[in-house]
Length: 363
View 1 (cartoon, rainbow, N blue to C red):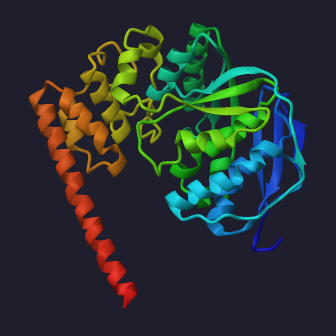
View 2 (cartoon, rainbow, N blue to C red; view 1 turned 90 degrees about the horizontal axis):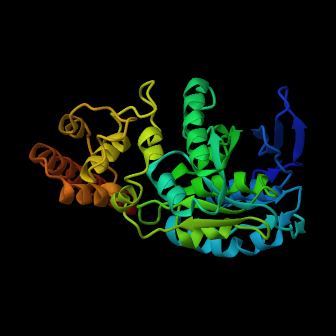
View 3 (tube, rainbow, N blue to C red; view 1 turned 90 degrees about the vertical axis):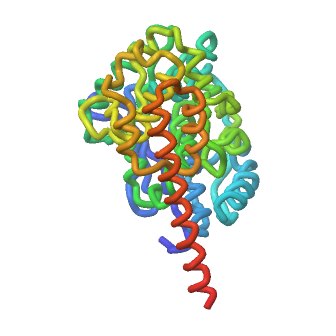
């Protein structure tokens, strides 16, 4: 195996001990696997999606033993152009056979029980047939108890909308080559990888948009490029604020009963109530007047939890500003102003250090 080639070996499929469908391949010398109680397809489109950005980030040729869909391959130059303009990645050579896959199946969406997910489910509930959830992305593979509780909530949402849940487990995030690129940049490519393995059951798959500006890894211009002849990836309704999304499903009981946003998993609860996302979501639910209806979030006062945050990432400042404009609680408003001030001071310090480092290396 050459250091200049990111090699994806022949894809294999077998049955697991419990009758599950397991698809795997050696990638860069280590095994990557996907497993589901639903049938998974041998499909190299999945592996190209999972590792294209990693090849571009490292400047390595991407080699696949199995054929990749011609439409997906044709989108690689455009993916490279966006990745180059956002993150400085380089175009790379792709070595693989090609194929054109027939389309089959219906509409589906990736569903985590979060705010963005519930908005997309609410908007498209009339056409959706499947809700896809991936164990190993926001819940670790060894955290089986948390996953089982989350899966039960997803089943309830599926039942409420007449959908079928599709659960897929994968070790993708622990694969060292995949992990060489930030999750924020490659998470939609990872979702698309799973969608391609479900070809035949799904044909159009919605990705819930996020209220975060580029160069975050999800954007309509990029997300659609992970499509093939058989599976279309659709970024759903980007220009809707998180507060407006909550307002859209504010009267929906299934959202009140099962909403889950946490990925840091600091406690045994599905929403820890302490991490930035839990605190921000609680503040957004309160600003829109439905926090008291939602049973999955803690009831402790918000202001102390906001004050406990050291700061927020720059792409989330706008969301906190939106919350501040809507809040009617003086103590919480003061806490949000202080949080934004801490964030601004931190950003100023980082900018100064970057300037010093650039001068140091220039000399």
